Every structure is written in structure tokens, then in C-alpha cells.
Image (cartoon, rainbow, N blue to C red; front, top):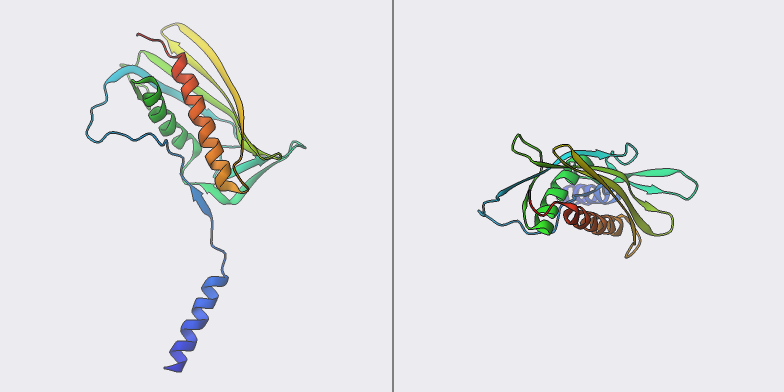
Amino acid sequence: MRFLSLLAALLLAACSSQPSGPQTYLLRSQVATGSGVPIVDSGIALGTITVASYIDQPGLVLARGDGKVHAARNHVWAEPLQVSLRRYLATQLSSDSGRGIAASATMSTRVRVDVTVDQLHGDGSGSAILVAYWDVISGEARKTYSFSEQEALAGDGYAPLVKAEESLLQRLAGAIAASLPAAI
């Protein structure tokens, strides 16, 4: 019996000394989606979502003032950033515009929104930065817009960075929604 108790204590000690493993962050809009509520197709959809290659990776990115970037190994996105950005923007745009914005264009899409995220990272001074561009394309007409903002982190670490990035993405979605045509 003593042997089993000693073995259990050793196993517990070994487990507690191991690194806790990666911290995983899921990018999702805080907008509550209605259950069983039909979404009316507004004819507007997200098209291409392009993410700069240095941030299109699992690790959260910090950029230093000397032009160097660091991708975290133990603080990672739960899914590819392009996938979560598409879901996030479709949900947030639908809420902000009051219309059903499809996550992907179909044959019935009359207005397509292509988004490019050029920067989405922390910086050396305790802020998150988001620089993005988008095109609103309707038939042959194309209008191009830009967004560039930063937000101070509410504390140290990666969790406050993720919260600040989510806040910036929410503001980006608001700007995109404001650029959509009133009637199509």
C-alpha cells in the first residue's frame, strides 16, 4: 500500500513539473447568433480573405521596433486565421449591418467584399495593431477602403493581446458594414 501511495505521489509531482502546454485562443464574435432564426440572403457576401504571410500562422505575433517579429510557440490560434477571420467578419458584419452577410460568395451574390489583413499583431509598446483593406465589388464597380488603428493592451500577456485584437476586428467590421451599399 505504501508503494502505491509513493508511486501516486511521484506521478503527481512529475505531472505538475511538466509545462502546461500551448494556450489556444479561439477568435469568435461576441454577437449572439439566434437559434432557429432564418437568415435572409441580402445578396452580400465575403469574397477573398487574404492574410499577410507573417501572421498567417498558428502563433500570435509580436512585432518589435527594430523590424523583427516573434511568433509565439505556446500561444496559438485554435484554427487557421483565415478561417476564423471569415467566420468572425461574417457574423459581425451581419450584426452591424442588420442584414445577412454570407461567409462565402455564391451565384446569387450581388455584392462581394474582399478583405486583406496586412497587420494584426502586438507591438513593443503594449498595443495591438490592425491594418486592413477591403474592396466592395458590385458588378463592374469597385470601391476600395482602408482601416488602420491600434488599441492599448489592458494588461501583460497574450490574453490581453487577443482581447485587443478582437476589439480592433469589431471596429473593422463596423467600418466595412458602413461602406456597404444601402440597397442592392
